[in-house]
Image (cartoon, rainbow, N blue to C red; front, top):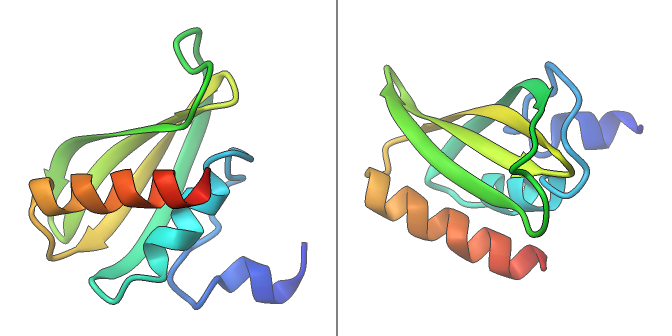
Length: 101
């Protein structure tokens, strides 16, 4: 992994590993001006994470939203720092998933 990839425009913080199929979606999301940063969290294996990438927004946080990314047979917490509403963020995620496919 190169240093340039670790920062991903300085907005994708690499605290933990990132699920392989989820990475292109996150890179497209952080390219947007209205996303301040994305901090991927803990990865845990789950049964319902087969097939295409899914991202569910779960709860608001102090500076954005917490979401769960499902991919590669695992789930990963995502902390998304943004001013976007839940609806606008959901449509941005949907577009990022479509563009990454």
